[in-house]
Length: 335
Image (cartoon, rainbow, N blue to C red; front, side, top):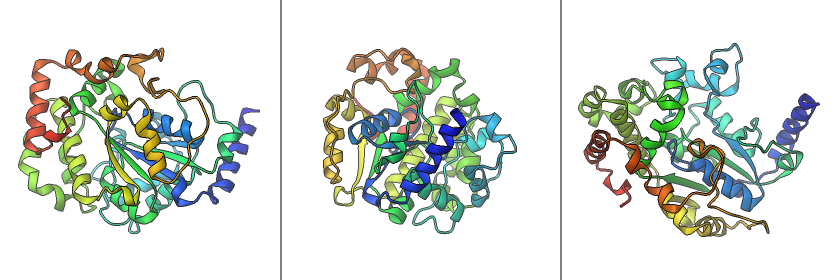
């Protein structure tokens, strides 16, 4: 019965996905632990949309290392990476500044994701229903698209919300999950040199100006390396993409979303020419991936925004702040 339901849902996705117009394919992007799942769930709720969760996610080492040749696994070789092990692939961000046409498998995967035709992953207690398959609005959430977001915007002309968060809060969240081993240790073993300087897809020409800084920070702790990866991928996004509400491209601060108590989501939807559904909506409820708050109890605004101050050591705070200043990303700090 479950398998039959899954096949019926996927068939529904494929059929209705062909009918979803570009203006109803909403894309949410942001670095890991920046509030992107919460933003996706909030938009999914007020738009009564179906969702696609992290199309560039490889679903864990066991799936990645299995014989299964799912579409995203076939995309990685298009970028000529120096490594193909899971810990590298798990944090890999495709680089394409203008268009994905030179990466046809990746372009096709993104197209299917934005249409809701990829198999949908949902966290928490809710499972995919046939109503989800019939929805003609799709909210797709990425954590690995910052270095190709401009290419996606140009190729597909879809509404985009990029969410960013204070780097100290992001890194505190990563360090607290799974007893410090979040994403099967991928972040602890992050190599800036491999991710930013050794992939033969054109990124070296952008990042080489910081090569000495990258190589120096490579020798620091995971907190320093994650801070550099966050800053440089976000810097790349700022340098390559024009955010303009007339183009339905918005860059929003997580902290401002929280303080707006849902109003910012409604303004985004209206600015994109979409209509909100008549549903009960509470943007203050934690997301399904807020594993630090597993019981999904409401938390105070102060706890959501400033709990990193109690979680990060003084050493890590100082290191993160130094890295952020190195790459001139101080405007990402909040308070």
